Amino acid sequence: MATLSALPNPNPNPNPNFHPDQSQTLDFDSLMLPQPQSPPPQPSPESSSPPPPPQLLQVCFNQDHACFAAATDNGFRIFNCDPFRELFRREFDGGGIGHVEMLFRCNILALVGGGSQPQYPQTKVMIWDDHQGRCIGELSFRTVVHGVRLRRDRIIVIVEQKIFVYNFADLKLLHQIETVANPKGLCAVSQGSDSLVLVCPGLHKGQIRVEHYALKKTKFISAHDSSIACFALTLDGQLVATASTKGTLIRIFNADNGTLLQEVRRGANVAEIFSLAFSATAQWLAVSSDKGTVHVFGLKVNSSIPENEKPQSSSNSDAAINPSNSPLSFIKFKGVLPKYFNSEWSVAQFRLQEGSHYSVAFGLQKNTIIILGMDGSFYKCQFDPEHRGEMTQLEYHNFLKPESAI
Image (tube, rainbow, N blue to C red):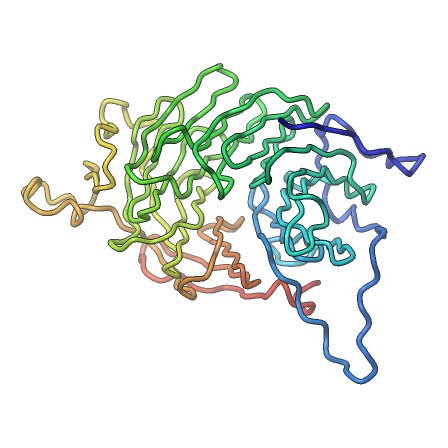
């Protein structure tokens, strides 16, 4: 059971630019106002070395991948992706933020405490207004919050076995969804103004649940035999990509009817999938895993393909399914050669440190990828779909180091 409260405003003249309906989107450059926060620690006279970088607790992109947020053990920082630069940071007196969720480039963010000394209880979601430099509301829960997703009209909160959907304007609870154990806080929401599509784990292993709120319809998709490890949804809510804990295959489904549209292979060995991301046009899909390689796959799903020609989800096995338009079909030997050889493979790859946690998204420039590491690394890479193979690194920054800030 969640409770909510609005926090009192100590400022009798609140910022007139704040609108409670959350429909306003503002550039962060307009938010660079002095905020009440503790002064940075001064180096001792004996040493002029800079203070050590904070511990990074979480990093995530905003909804259109134009910005990203870093939650640390002493606050949070907001960055622009292209061009790369730090937009602003908010630091607290040693209080950690375990999760920060942006709303495009708006002044409203959702914060959850984290680290060894959380700034806020980990059972609360704090609604932060950066114009006012304070929290303007909170949602309280009986258990630890594992994730938050934002739309301009909704707040979605993920706890261990339940998801809560709230109206943004008045924090009214609209819907509760039961899920399997969800310690990663897996959840994805569409961003179209005309409809709301929400994807979350189902009630059984390997199953995802798709809520179509405009149609008042729920669709369950048995995506894998193994447990769901990661999924992604296009901004319009039409396509969903899934990966299991086995991590060898990625499947792309029609979110409306659950039809399996395409299946691609990351590799032959078991891997932990960290992130999936569609390009803005759903032409490409990016995948990162603990194997230290980011893959880009070409997608063949589009409305011009008749439904009766698309492969159907007749099997839930994690064994490879051979799409009819695969360049490696070997039609003559179908049913003889292992399906592994018929798999669709990535068109581009980028090698990183194996075992490290990376999140991936597509850049604003054509055929570019943005990669964020839990070690503070920022990569911008470019891939060539014509020649395939290794991506070209265009930029590298460490966003935790002071000299990275502009």
